[in-house]
Length: 564
Ligand SMILES: [Zn+2]
Image 1 (cartoon, rainbow, N blue to C red):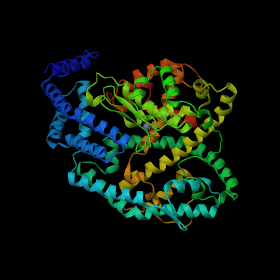
Image 2: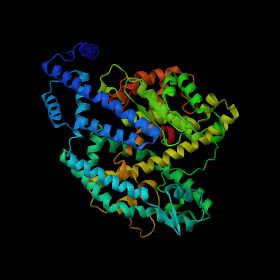
Image 3: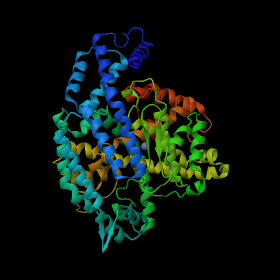
Image 4: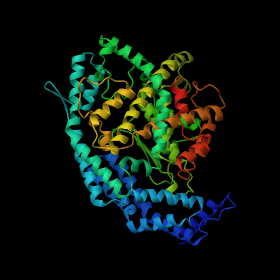
């Protein structure tokens, strides 16, 4: 009881400071009731939330079936809290009354309303969708591209596409792997319609709109951002595409006009060719990446020593082979899973994951539980990306690995050129994904095969093989398993550039945007902590960005960094 009173008082103190003209929290009857409502919800949700995250952490390390089952069980329990219709009705009443005026309480109401709303659909509908998605996922998992007598895994396909220089073989492999599209297309169309039905049942136009809106993304704003970025990258990409095509024409000893989608060393042309050859791995050979990471973050005023201790960073049998960061309890227990090998890829990953970790750790712990979380998925992604980019930066290598000035200069130019090329190629590919999904959910009965190739030709400047009319769109697994999410990757990149420019100009106070490593500059950490991390979800994400940088999210700085 005493504990609850203290929390209650704290809420009043926190939310009333600095705005004398507003009523303190819980002043009105409705605000008092809402505060009680949230408290009851927290009491239910917090222990399950923590158990759920711990179960996932344990499962990822042990790989044991029972640990995964415990995690799934906890996930269902957590979701069930927000599926409660009577609680959602209460929230609706609070919302409609307009009586919740305190800034923090109002924000909590919005965040909780969104979370409840997306869990309100009929359980039978949700289960049917999950089952369908699982069945489709299994088909992706079981599919092997058949080339001659060989059955190839995705990794083997990628390897062939990357290494072979024989156009006939490349065409064969590319065509064979695209057959997964035909295997799943009809089911996938059904799934899209089921998702649309679910979205309509809770008041949205379609599933794409729902996915954006429940994450506080206005579909029109996002489309505007993508248009802005399209206009900014179009010419630079077309120019680079010429270079890429010249490079490939030489590689395959064919005419530029003969280049086809299978010549781009990748199933979707989502990655740039390695035209600029710098061997970054050699700098990391035999190095202790966790120590380098720890020293770097400490030098920018964001120590990670405690989180490194709680993390699991090296390979083990049965362990998850990828990497992630998890905030177990929103009270300081933040952990990272990695499988470090001393090479560039893992340095990038370590910088990336601990970028997430410093964000989570530095969110104001006095905020109420439901706001004690990153402003948006892509805002934490942006910090991770901004830090990850350093692994191929000449200045960063000089400051953190002690390579010589000469070496640093040598790699700086090529390192930047390859990063730029990668960004341009990826941004055009993300345009295809965003626009395809948006249009598909808007009208799943249109000619999707044509839609896909029209977009690929327009944004990626690839040539559709003559007469091809296959569901190539369905060969991208994200469309089935991570729907309507791709735009967040690109928004993360945009914000990474926007923050980087702001920091260089206003925090480090330099005009040199190229040769920065942030190393030894604690003012960088101070700025990020105060302006980006600390507010958590207290503000709508674009308000947070505006308060931190003076501008809403814009493609301008990404373009300055990578287009010019
Ligand atoms: Zn990430």
